[in-house]
Structure formats: structure tokens, C-alpha cells
Image (cartoon, rainbow, N blue to C red; front, top):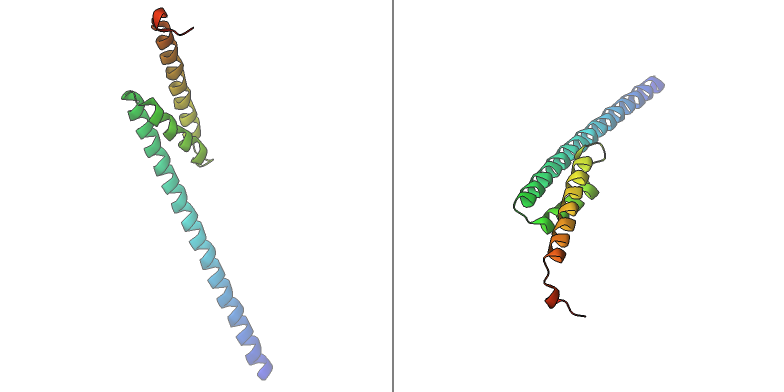
Length: 112
């Protein structure tokens, strides 16, 4: 008789532990999903801020935001590709500005 009671207690404890552990894993999955949503929201906000900065001519800020986005973006998103394309756009603009500055520099202002 005592053996049957002990067996019931063990079965109940194992069942309770199984329920508790499965609940923890579900909570972890929900937490992971919410973190991915937050990361996607941040990635989108960074790309929008970078685009606005590019449009306004603030290339240094756009470059900093895009480097952060490319570094921190979740691997399962397309944000890394978009950030890298926009970063290439910013770097091209930097080169064009440097070339224009060099071409427009007065030869008399150059120090030899």
C-alpha cells in the first residue's frame, strides 16, 4: 500500500516538473520572439534615420547609424543587406565630395 502511494507521489512530482519545465521553455520562446520583434523595429528605425540623414546631407551621422545597424542587425533579416547598400551609397558620396573639393581647390592655396 505504501509503495502505491509513493509511486503516485513520484508520478505527480514528475508530471508537475514536466509542466513547469515546458512552461519555462514556452516563456523563453516568447521572450526570444519579442526580442526579435524589438530588434527588427530598431533596425527599421535606424535605416529610416539613416535615409533621412542622407537626404539632409548629414553623411557622417548616416554612416555611423548604418555601421551600427550592419553590426547589430539580426542575422535573419534583410536589414544587413539594406544597411550595407546604403553604406556604399554614403561612401560613394564621400568620395564624390572629396574629389569635387580637390578639383575646386585653388592652386595658389596649395602649400608646396
